[in-house]
Image 1 (tube, one colour):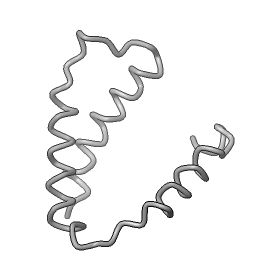
Image 2 (image 1 turned 45 degrees about the horizontal axis):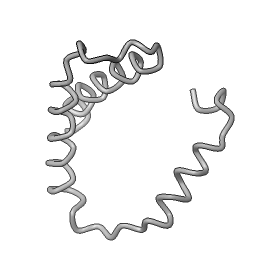
Image 3 (image 1 turned 60 degrees about the horizontal axis):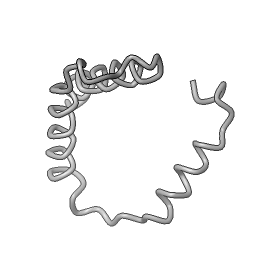
Length: 75
């Protein structure tokens, strides 16, 4: 199962995002968990998604759709 491994990296990303929201993300914050998360997700991509076609138009559409939602809906 991938979820337990992914949740560890998700929590580290959530922590960094929370620091960013609080304007507390600075050069003193350890970014090693971010580096590990990036490497982990790149590895997952290479194994599970590398053969999938990417539709950049649809990705942009999805991003815009999420960005235009009221902030109360996103949380």
